[in-house]
Amino acid sequence: MARFCRARGCTSEIRDAHFYCGRDWRNLGEQLVTAVENVYPDAARIYLGRTNYPERRLLEHRVKFGLKRLAVLHWAGCKDEIAEVEEWLIASFKGERKLENTSDASEGGWYGHWNCVYVAWRPKEGAARWPGTAFERVSELDLGHRLVPDRSFQKVPDLLETELSVDGAKKVLDRHWKQ
Image 1: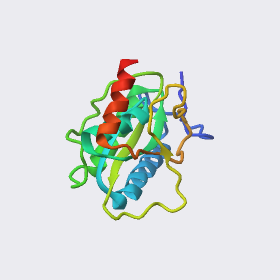
Image 2: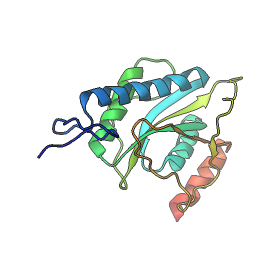
Image 3: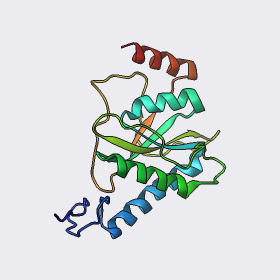
């Protein structure tokens, strides 16, 4: 049975264990690398990863690495797709001094029906605010109010930011895990 590219409007067949035709797969990878490159000048440190709950993951990175911002780059309902995209991004930035990732592999688990690939970062001291860019503030975790997975091909990143201190983020996470 033939399988077709998941990019909107594309009718190209794909190989087993792939999600897009070769052209759209390359386009997706280039778009995601460009999104990380757009963050890079503003960042003191970055982390590339995947999660099913970006708001929680932002607070976890606040506690572990001091990161304050997170951009959701790509959603998928397929573990292999997300792992491949995550590893592609990590490989693209391997050796960069700002990268916090210590492994080249996609080591996270799969939870829920949808997971996303993201870049999280801590802005440099004195970094200019992104003009006209709206970050959704994360100060609590509310399972009833979360980012909704957007499986659009080449979507605009969802931007999250927290002003919580490291201790404040830890308290929110502790309350969340007690629920």
